[in-house]
Length: 413
Image (cartoon, rainbow, N blue to C red; front, side, top):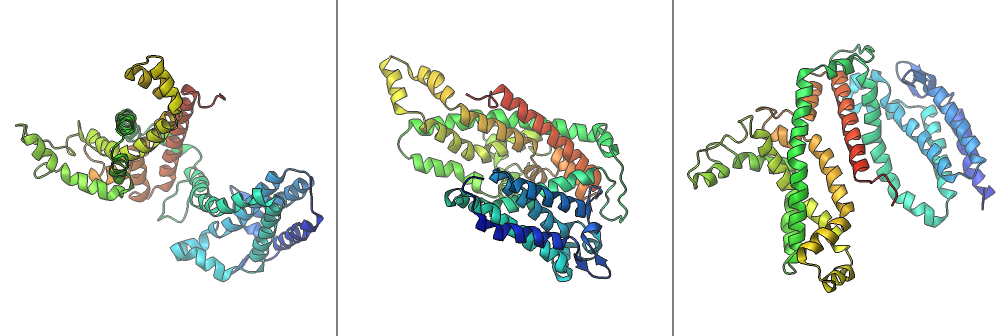
């Protein structure tokens, strides 16, 4: 390894030794003593997982792959920190406090594993120069949070999706793919998917068109740019719950502002959130209005990145305003356009809060995420809910890959 400092062995060797000792010490002692071999994931004993990680750590250490050394050390630390979440004995009894209860009962084995893993993480950081280490130090807290608040729940959801998992029933048998088979034949789930797609078809084009239009207007009008940016961005930073409550009042069929406004033109009141033919579009309009500020900021940044010399050269060549817009500005803001296109599609298909607060899933507005939430948290069928969420994830992933392929985002320019 280039510029390898042998003094760093004072971190690596103790880290490996301490971790190895921890493999055979008690992890927790309560009514009974539990060792690392008593913990497992997907039927694989944690003892074998840690032995494999230690061996990999030692083998990688003889190479110059510093990033792989860091990855291996973080994986080991992740498995150590996941141990408190693996057993159901204290989770069922202490529920939300099971994690704190674990630390009260944890013994030398777990702490040896934790200390050894920390030694290896510090060793991995020390292999890099200070310039390369500092960025990792800054992102480490966020990475840890993402791992435990996103990756670990996602992996656990996959595990649950293969079981009949009722929160009130202690026995959670393995059912294989039956949850998935039930989901793809569930008429109501398929209908909720169509509702989500219909909602996205209304939201995504509107966000792109209106976001770009207003961004171009702000760019074209030099005065009060900062004021308009703040005004348009305020709805986006406002709580979605608060926005939904306000718009629910605006849409009220008897004393809402929307019906008052159309009554000025002699039109009859409309049941905006109760009519199945228009309810989903009424909610979509709120989503477009709320997200408009974010889209404007993204498009504005793309337009401002266009060199002034390019626009000036086009004017000298006799290009009209429309030709500048269509031939220069639109092609050069392609990255911003793709970003809005993909992120707005994902967020639209995953819509939940607006539906929950404004319609409660009534009037044919029950989207896929709302249906999954209903099955998981009202019927307590977590296994089936997780299976549906995995199917929805697969659909969103496929759509995103198609979008990136169509927009040539996957191709190197």
